[in-house]
Length: 311
Ligand SMILES: NC(=O)c1ccc[n+]([C@@H]2O[C@H](COP(=O)([O-])OP(=O)(O)OC[C@H]3O[C@@H](n4cnc5c(N)ncnc54)[C@H](O)[C@@H]3O)[C@@H](O)[C@H]2O)c1
Image (cartoon, rainbow, N blue to C red; front, side):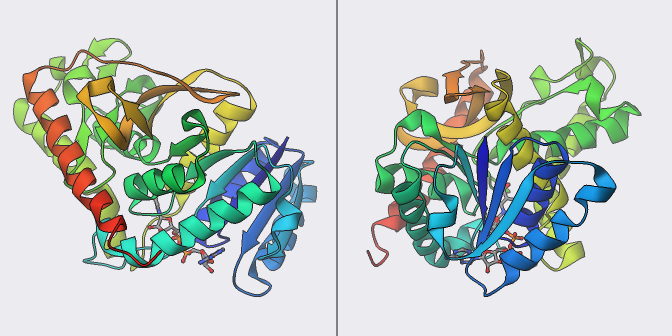
């Protein structure tokens, strides 16, 4: 297996580090536009191999896409992160140009690859990657729900005094502070509904804290978070390269599912060697359906901005 991570910044490097430690690929390429950064981080990570005991061969490249040739999976993390007070949506102008260019370059050398889009605003960047490359829909997957669901499980664990690993909880919809939908009614603690253990006020608080999970960290760190985003990207790579058929909330192209068309949005999918292999249609109640529709409307108006950007 060969995996490429584009963008050797905070999220990209953390994602690569996770991929190497778990030996998800025999070859791992880190690519960045900044002279020497990807090469430097690749070498630094390679120097952990003797200490951590992994065999993955990591190489770095400054914008030389020929080094990425034959990649099975590519994770795109290149682009600006948000600063305190910014929304993910404010990044669209700069990041659209970056993501489009990167996706095109990647496909020149790895036409059959599976692409995981991380750059924000992620739902719109995933849609852009799908439309601009014409790659088969199952091979373009946005990472947002995997992270937001992990943050949701963290919030639940804090209130329940439970292990996050014992909690099942999904966030669907857009990957934005106001567009994500933490499905608390569906969340369970080892199969028991969490609502059996939490008051209505606690549930509301958990949902609210999950939705601003990223913004809370951006305020503390001065830039957006990287440990959980990097780990979430790597977990998706793992499900694909190991053909795990694991369920993640991912941003994928909808063609009628959840009542939506011509949009990429977060829904539960099965990840395996073919990319996203199946969408699970959850039985949403009227309120959840309405939230999903509102989320889709907001993401669609963000997608509309793409047509106003220079080609
Ligand atoms: N989807 C999610 O859940 C999620 C979570 C966290 C961050 N993000 C997003 O991921 C992106 C990266 O965040 P970060 O914190 O790693 O930022 P960062 O600034 O640390 O790293 C970004 C890297 O991209 C590189 N880059 C820029 N243009 C490039 C190009 N054309 N080709 C190759 N590399 C290029 C930069 O040189 C930099 O090293 C941001 O858009 C951020 O908003 C998404």
